[in-house]
Image (cartoon, rainbow, N blue to C red):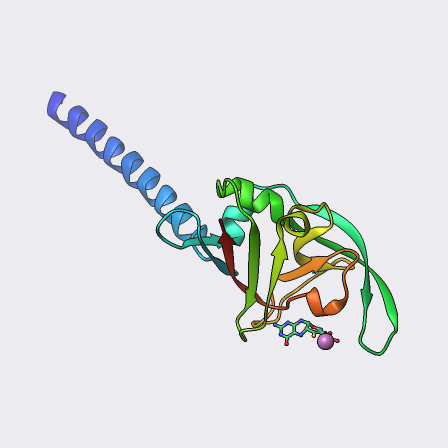
Length: 162
Ligand SMILES: Nc1nc2c(c(=O)[nH]1)N[C@H]1C(S)=C(S)[C@@H](COP(=O)(O)O)O[C@H]1N2
Ligand SMILES: [Mo]
């Protein structure tokens, strides 16, 4: 009788432990897939992978910006994203003199510290309520007040220049 009871308790304990282990394992796996990754160089010795998952720890912000096209036409857009300054602060960039933002196709721009730190400079992930979802452009640099040649599509790398 006693042994049966003990074995029963043991069985229940084993089941409970298994269920808990299974749950936590699943949770870890589902939170690992990143939708986008930006390689950040110039902070410390190694490049940092900044992903949409780490970005969740930074609040998003919304800005109204006018996209000025080469043909002279203008379009007001509402952009949602992460302030470049907030991202650099989150990654403990410290002091820097400028920031180079580069796309996967090699297109890049060097932002002065003032421009990088500006309230209207964001890593945009959503425009007019719609998420950017093209494979080659899930993050777009948006700089309020600058022409669209500064709006780098498909940001892949950020270089912090000390
Ligand atoms: N990745 C990437 N982003 C880029 C460019 C580019 O060549 N590659 N060209 C820039 C320039 S010069 C302009 S005018 C706009 C063009 O945007 P549009 O094709 O939506 O008009 O994208 C900007 N962003
Ligand atoms: Mo352009």
